[in-house]
Image 1 (tube, rainbow, N blue to C red):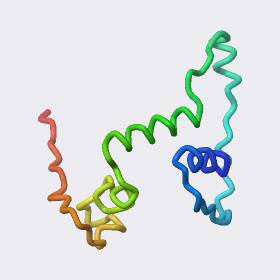
Image 2: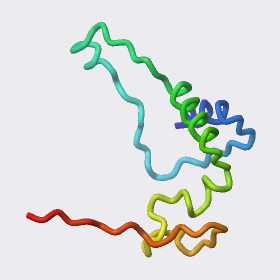
Image 3: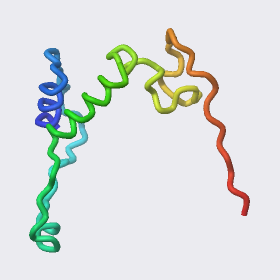
Image 4: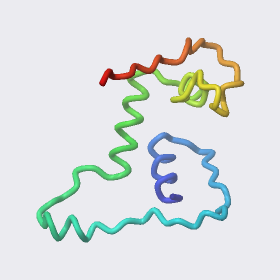
Length: 106
């Protein structure tokens, strides 16, 4: 995770990267790509972490997304949800009511 965070911090030009201490969760997110090499031996990935982070930076820049807006309630996917731990925070921009769920008829 540290390696990913460091690449993203470089791409986003973040100088204040802080990585917390390891907690009780000792899962590893390292993966093996042996199977894809066996099944598709000529497969060559087109993207890496740096390319993905660069694409996201460009999208955020094109959308004029500020760090404040990204970190604020308006960026929370569950904005308006009573179970959202950030729901009590105030924001300069109203997010409006949560989206209505549409049930499909059977």
